[in-house]
Image (cartoon, rainbow, N blue to C red; front, side, top):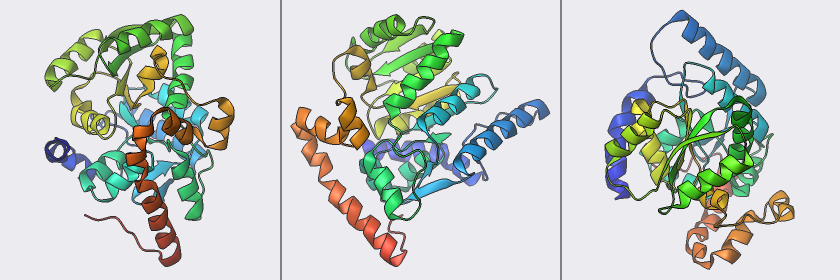
Length: 298
């Protein structure tokens, strides 16, 4: 299924990847002077906080910004005529993208690429290009953005997880963030993209949280961003389960120490199969640091 999705979406993003430069991944929608001016202002602002560069970790460029800076930039998008999608790759996804050019292009074409995983922050440091903001968990980015959205009465659509989870998450988010408008919710068990896109567009949200798991959510956002009438679409993995209260994050001290992955492994032992790739990820980083060789394929 994944390979089929990649084939379909590679055709859809090919034109995007050919059209460079595109500094912050902002969607193009015509050449109006006012619109272009605002786009340049946004790009300049992001450039100021991230040194106008992305930090490369095995072929994926990460924005060199903090959680708060990322959330502020995303909120600025809501007040513009632009739209973007946001990705939050961890080492597992970077490892997958290493051999998959379609996925790698999708990640690099995102408006924001946030390092969700201590492994990415450590990897950047190992390569001699540390991320100033360190780890930027997708859920922390989401919380910071939600706080800003609530103040201004912005709207949100939740997509993903098991039936009923998105609705429960929406209710709890409304209770926690008075002023936030939840305009719709749908589970991640769908087969017709067009029907889901129509439902989202009918609700007219400012922001869409696509919590479909990786790499499905990245493929889905890239394949549908052009027909989604939203300002911002963010892929946030299992965040809906946390917002709904079905899953808990690690204690704060473990989050600060970068051991949230260990807590999740303890709670979900089946994740060990996915984490077997981490030693390989580290070995490739060491190889690149020592010999300066790009090790991705395709």
